[in-house]
Length: 297
Image 1 (tube, rainbow, N blue to C red):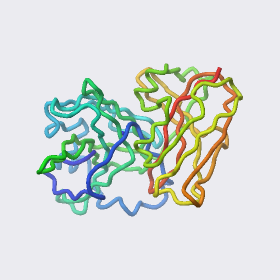
Image 2: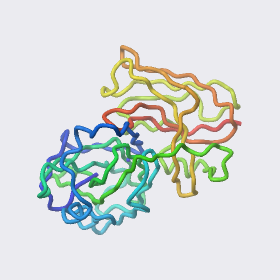
Image 3: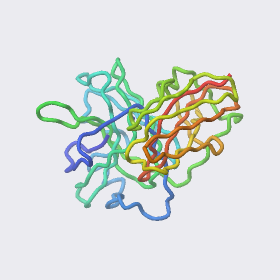
């Protein structure tokens, strides 16, 4: 698997927030300025409006949030960790949103991103994200309460995405790190496909197979991904034991969404090892995908 300065004038896009464990945001080409970029604010202005470089947890108190960096290249994996307020129920879905300013005074809208996570039993959370739209923007992570007077509970921060993304290191690179099943699960790469942020369904024929054996993933695509949309399989390559890393396509392994909204992909992984994978597509400058882990022996 969130956005807003505590007292900013904000209009939610699409109504109530939804969320899900680890959904990955992909990168668009950076030639033309995206239509949803809104008014450009400086880092100082974002800070003034409640989006500092260090997470603003004023409205998240007594929760915590930690961000390892405020700048990353396109496609670079970044992880936000922390603890939700003690009144937040375990299992609560958290969603990340981008603030789209409409003027220089702090007014604007929040655009929900397909980046989500779930609050754990001990109220901790870990959210991966990969941003594709270059520039400096304000972001929020949080959820809408279901009380008689709904309230948006969140923390805010600013983040700069640069257009100098690098490909993931190969499996033989000294910078590549192997993650165990528990760490992969914590990052959202579950043995049973993680589809909460996908918006559709998915089943995986096996999560452990001999190298080179066929594996099938199939299901239904979310309504945003129309018939004919190409879905690409990508592998997550970790660069540290905390779960940072990046994604790269697995060869040319793709499938398309059918006219009835379903999809099916049979693929083979010839390399031995346990890795996290995502199957999805870029939509409106963001990545909509399914996450899962697979071990080949």
